[in-house]
Length: 143
Length: 128
Image (cartoon, rainbow over all chains, first blue to last red):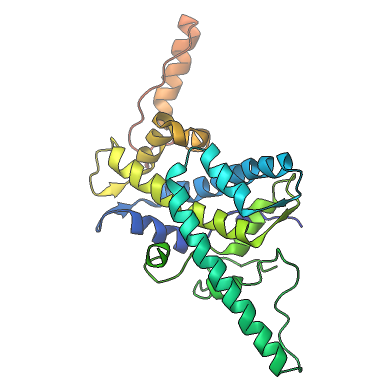
């Protein structure tokens, strides 16, 4: 799939909010700084992905998994992220499990048309919930 | 731990996973990404944004105390090893006039000019 340049950027509003959460109240962020951080974040994703992929390849796997990403963080010297990442992952897994069970129940009840939600394992089908509030800052690409 | 994992609006992650996925897949060697890995990458990116912003603000030598500027960020990329991978995309800026002077000096001396400290960011045309 061909990516347009804007697809490799992250939504400005979200980036701005995350930055504001990290700084003391009342501190301004220049537009240039915000844009630079956004680019840095995209570069971070690429770097982390490449690093994680090396771990996957070492393990002779074609699918990147959680362990690969965690190993990548350590390799990139972001050990400080390990604890918050692991905690978040636990919460995330529980949430996903809860959703799956809720869907199973729904399936049992209604045989009729249900929205096609889950496809393959590694699809980000649960995105919709997380993206709900961004009102078209940029066109979202939905898989 | 659950409380800590959530952001101020009680979400687990704010960055859209689908967009993160697009960026990850733009890497040619990557075949597939499992859901947990996608989530972790998004979350790590948020932590990274916060770390970059707060670090740059704390260590910025910029004159502005109540703002985070581009200069603060490019200082961080140059001086902090952890952020050195950003050096190419956050280059220091210098005034065009200074750059031209540097070039001239290089011609005259036959030496490599030293990096000048950058100045104001906006009005003047800058060279990266």
